[in-house]
Image (cartoon, rainbow, N blue to C red; front, side, top):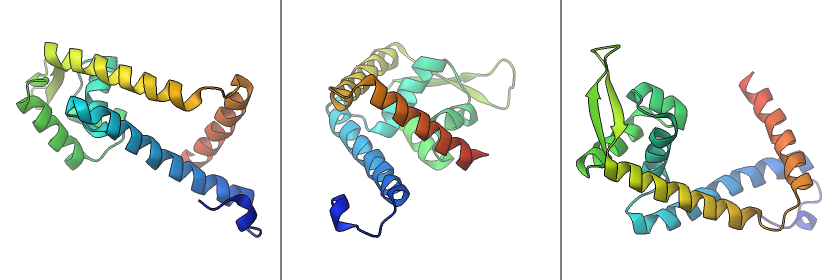
Amino acid sequence: MPPDDDLPDARTSHRLGSLVGDLSRAWRTRMDQRLKPLGLTLASGGVLWTLAWVGSQTQIQLARHIGIEGSTLVRQIDRLEAEGHLRRIQNPDDRRANLLELTETGRALAASVVAVGVAVRDELFEGIPDADLNTTLRTLHRLHARLTE
């Protein structure tokens, strides 16, 4: 993104919107780089992390938690299942839908994903005062609420 001085007519809100998009892409790229040695991407790591966090889920529930499309999720689930990190089990509440749950290796790998995420987060926010982060967080929450109303 060009420095603000190069955008004399650009509104601050436009620059903020562009920067949020750039930040999101850079975050995903950094996470993909850090997860690559584990044989994962942010998408597959997100599946493991979410199942570790919320427990067994149906595919539909998992897609909602992660916020990704069904076709992308199916590829991740199939791959993680083939590698022995998760399994499909019969849902006792709905025989039409399987539950996805982590295996022992999946739980261990999910812990590594969390550790990578914490390390990236800590590096990113190092030296930024809490007051600045709180102001940014309030603003982003307000913007998110307006988009999801």
